[in-house]
Amino acid sequence: EVQLQESGPGLVKPSQSLSLTCSVTGYSITSNYWGWIRKFPGNKMEWMGYISYSGSTSYNPSLKSRISITRDTSKNQFFLQLNSVTTEDTATYYCARCRWYLFPFDYWGQGVMVTVSS
Amino acid sequence: DVQMTQSPSYLAASPGESVSISCKASKSISTYLAWYQEKPGKANKLLIYSGSTLQSGTPSRFSGSGSGTDFTLTIRSLEPEDFTVYYCQHYNEYPLTFGSGTKLEIK
Image 1 (tube, rainbow over the protein chains, first blue to last red):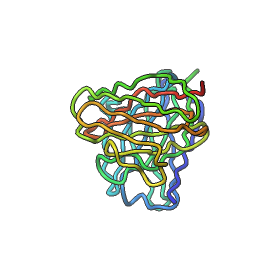
Image 2 (cartoon, each protein chain N blue to C red; image 1 turned 180 degrees about the vertical axis):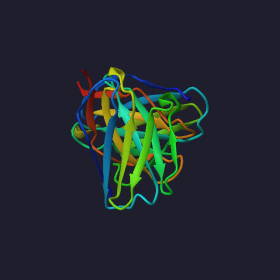
Image 3 (tube, chains in turn red, cyan; image 1 turned 90 degrees about the horizontal axis):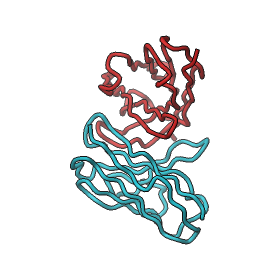
């Protein structure tokens, strides 16, 4: 079965970069689409972006040039980097899989809470 | 972006009852609509996709309906494990967007 697990620092200072790892077991990230989603306090959820089986990426325009999603296929991991964070980036961050382009998320990680605070 | 308006935000019901949750899109999304179940400490679960197709493993007491802009998740004969949070999400185009969630509580 496909399993995803997010990891990374739980506390990041404003203006710094947030870096998270999604470790995938049970399936190769060289297939399908792999995304990041976050849930803000108050429960609003936001799709952040994805990296595809080929390594191509797509990002939410709301994040402009602050976001980067990369991968390490040898470790079956993909990564989120969000630059110049503010307190408004405080959220629970999830990684998830889509079977194909414009498909729902059929497997999710449990999420990791990240607080942006000095 | 497509705005997803989900209602109600909170819903109280008793085990054995039936409930419905609404999700309205700001423009037509055909049937590209998914419903998820969220439980603390667990991975979100895809319940329904394509508006009405049950994901493998979803109990038959769950059903989805709708197309275009109006969608409904119905849960019949509520079980204790159903009292949690539900989200809708469209996947008609990028960026994907979610509803604001519905918390189903025991009355």
